[in-house]
Image 1 (cartoon, each protein chain N blue to C red):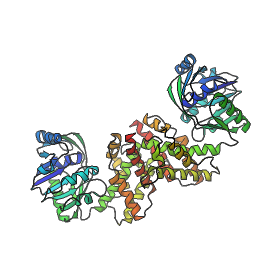
Image 2 (image 1 turned 45 degrees about the vertical axis):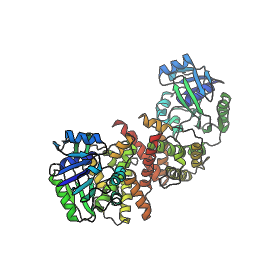
Image 3 (image 1 turned 120 degrees about the vertical axis):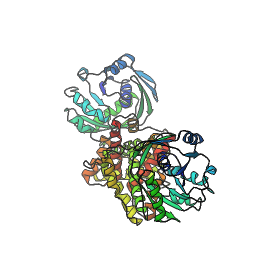
Image 4 (image 1 turned 90 degrees about the vertical axis):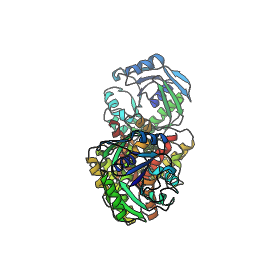
Length: 306
Length: 306
């Protein structure tokens, strides 16, 4: 079976390397030197896995194999529109799976081709150690569901392939309950981390003193839950419980939005906090705190040019 | 007339240098080398004034002149408690004036001595260019009112002395309306600047798009006004108007709380945002956004040790 993984950040690299254990994998990168490094040196995984995967790689969408059955678009949400535009007319026989944070990835891809589409959210994490080396940090699962022209059975086949490669994955009849749980979790934890400079640590669950950060985190989650309820989404996991459990892992995870603002890079704000705020406004749900975090991080991005 | 200025940051330096034009000034510093620099080189003022003042300086409270009639405590609010403690038993004949941001400075000083007390807030600004050089940036006024054992007439005499030295000052029968205007302005502008990294620029007054920062700023100001109303304080200036006017000056002021978090220094959060939040809680006023900013900046300070 031939698989394309587009995007070789930490998530794309983890997927590509593990899938290469059970399939023929071609990685689509933005930079040709990145593709060359992967072709020449393979892709090393350290941490929870330890091997070097052999795979093909290219920076040219037109050079992707015509017989790929599955293409996973694993870039950041900010890079998805140009990636999908570049894939127009390619991957004719492939099912395309999005795995971005936030909402709206499926619609972006759907506008650029007739591919059958799967939705995914992932809870695993890794750290890029270079173009040809990724560290596998959190071995939590990737969840997959049908979106357009696909069924739960299609999602299950992809989940089984990912499991065969050594990662964790699970198929669902409807991904929205999981997607929204992660949306609310990410809007809250990523936003607060970006503004405070704190990794996702114990402060996020502290609720004793009136000045404790956890009270704000809980109130932000409650606003998100109200939006989900208005959107008729029954959450798969309680984002507050997700938050508390994550802080108890003792791992001090640095959310990507914090890493982005510290490096003065564009964040995934619009597809996460912006998407949640717009859903709330559309549905008439009052979310003053989520809106405040959205405006503050947006202003933080505006400060890059100061 | 003999005057003591305790604290030689930008505000203390501006006051000391200008007052030295019309009075005998002794500056109390924390570091002896700072005092030595002032004794030896004088205190240069550039910017809106341009002169070098001759004055005395010491780092030892016990060495302060016994016949001082006025002592201005011009340190940051975070340094006031140890400063006032160090002044216990000194300055027997002096009226003591506080000039800190936020609320609570007068109570802190009152607990350490029987001095007659004046309250002040200042809207001028400067930039320390070194131990013996301060740049005078904004030539707005310092406002003074009675607090304990003093009258408006006492406030007027100090205002006249400051005016004679070349700065702007005004006396009021009750300083609380001005103090609260500045409290609400500072809690909002300093807090938002510290979280976003933005100087106090046009973003703070932008209210067109739903994601605009100015909407949050206005909502924060509205919460502050509700607290002032509950505390029976009729504001001297509308903090929203203060905000808009300041952003129109085109000066791109960097609020001290932003400078503090970027240098990973303790901020004046507790005497500004903490004081406002505690007043709101005491009075039963709901201030979710001000409380959010308070918790976020507090968490930002906690991130220094990460």
